[in-house]
Length: 109
Image (cartoon, rainbow, N blue to C red; front, top):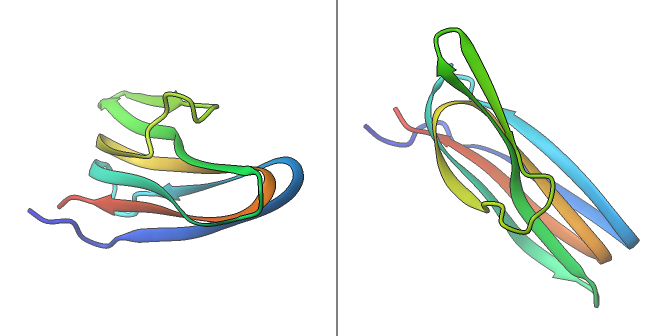
């Protein structure tokens, strides 16, 4: 088994206050294990920036789909394995700065 078909997306935001942007990546191969990541790659300015896995959708049983939500970065994961993964959502929050982040979903086959 190996990680295959790495799916990635970039997010960027700039704000003189607080702003958030999110993206969702679906596992195109259907349900299965996957590694989800959120990574800041650039931050400019005197403010703060946060990137985190803000949502996970997974198949808990043949007739049940569950959603986990982390609306704030405090205590949220920036990287994690997800069993029976269907999709993940990554959020970038900026406060008085410019930031770029990368969201990745790496299926395990």
